[in-house]
Length: 89
Image (cartoon, rainbow, N blue to C red; front, side):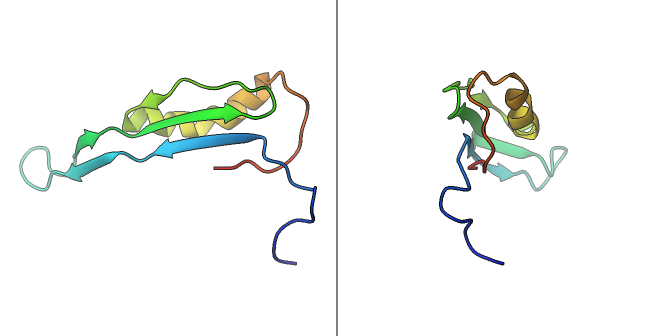
């Protein structure tokens, strides 16, 4: 079966915001392949169940690590009501 779940069976429990930033790849020289950032990537997470909001993390490595773990990390410590449902991202 395809399409959206039946009305009332899915619930948004959190929101993950990611700003991919803006930069240009260095193509020549010793730093070839690196990115020169004009605006660093950023991310933050907000839990709808307990209304917790994370700090905004900045920088490509910090954002990558944050995104990889925030949902499971927060879910383990969330004080909001127990819910099952979809995450918005």
